[in-house]
Image 1 (tube, rainbow, N blue to C red):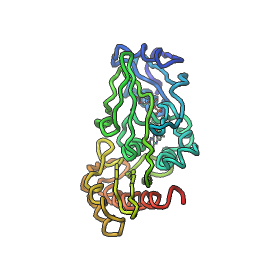
Image 2 (tube, rainbow, N blue to C red; image 1 turned 135 degrees about the vertical axis):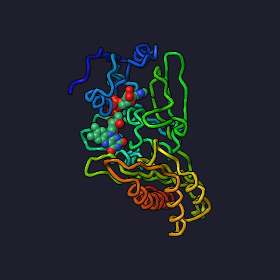
Image 3 (cartoon, helix red, strand yellow; image 1 turned 120 degrees about the vertical axis):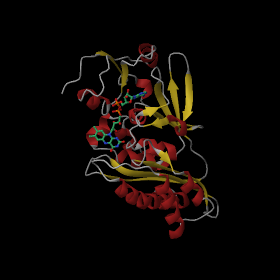
Image 4 (tube, protein in one colour; image 1 turned 30 degrees about the horizontal axis):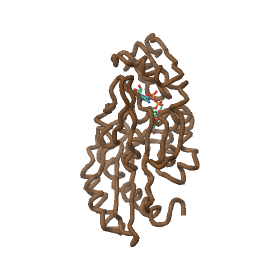
Length: 293
Ligand SMILES: Cc1cc2nc3c(=O)[nH]c(=O)nc-3n(C[C@H](O)[C@H](O)[C@H](O)COP(=O)(O)OP(=O)(O)OC[C@H]3O[C@@H](n4cnc5c(N)ncnc54)[C@H](O)[C@@H]3O)c2cc1C
């Protein structure tokens, strides 16, 4: 099917784009890579009257690093993140997550900002951003504000971004500590959507005991979920089998999976337990030995 008719705008600056969405009316949508929005428009699940394309705004497409951490512009494509050497070395979970998304065609067009704002509970970037404790910058014509990933994802396809706001950048703290992270997922077939995914970030002290931990889940709830009790169970420990088993069991308890055409709730719980152990173990090894050692 073709989408219903709409007016198309292609601003070349952020301020122009913010002006175009200033009224916050529900008939106006932002277009990034179009990999989620356009299929929804073709299926006529969504029929916005006005599309504001971010693709021509250079200031939203960047990867940089400063004393606050790593910064990624919202329109940076999934493929760029997958292939960026600095990201691979500093925050390997992001490279891994990007590489797990769909297929090269989707990754070449889809953007990190679009993936986060779409907030599909099976999207892969939301749990990764929760695990690395990312902060998002939201701009409107009136003001710019920051929001932590923990407060951004509200529900299925719903975020804390208002309809007159654009996600402009994602900031990931880089600390001078022994930190490792990893993303593991099971998908439906090749290039298929996530059945369940686990993002883990582990920090260890000088004795290689876990001193910090963030675990987030995709595909097993109405939004990306933190597994807070699993995190607490790992603190002060090293990842022996019994410790990993408890963390996995607590994550399954925290999950709220549905049965759908992709997988049953029971299957999702089963693979989730395996993924938690795997992601935590790999993140721990990276924290102890350094990324890719
Ligand atoms: C075949 C296929 C398989 C896929 N498999 C996966 C997968 O395995 N894992 C996965 O995570 N994703 C998957 N996706 C989704 C893909 O990653 C999308 O690219 C992503 O969800 C949306 O990014 P986009 O840039 O294409 O955004 P768009 O489709 O352009 O926009 C998505 C939504 O976000 C809003 N938006 C976009 N950018 C901004 C911004 N900067 N500020 C505010 N609002 C914004 C739009 O208005 C829209 O509501 C798949 C898609 C396809 C077509």
